[in-house]
Image 1: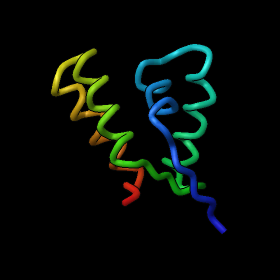
Image 2: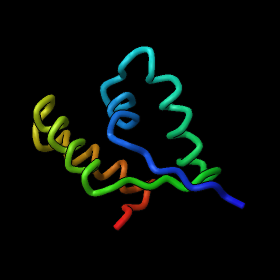
Image 3: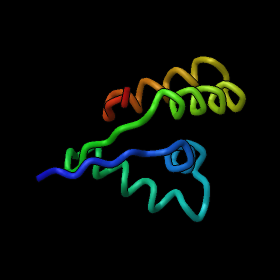
Image 4: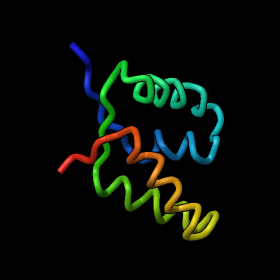
Length: 78
């Protein structure tokens, strides 16, 4: 049975912003989702926060790229 995990914004921001010391563990979780060993889920609230942080740190294009990458490997919880 494949496990399902709900990621909050902090885990994703650890990866996107390469925040030490958490980026290593957070990246391992991402890899498990990307390789379909677990199913990854996010909420709309998480995506909104990721977009806001991305926009503030790199602009709209960077923010949209981050959201697109997340949506390519994770499902959005309704």
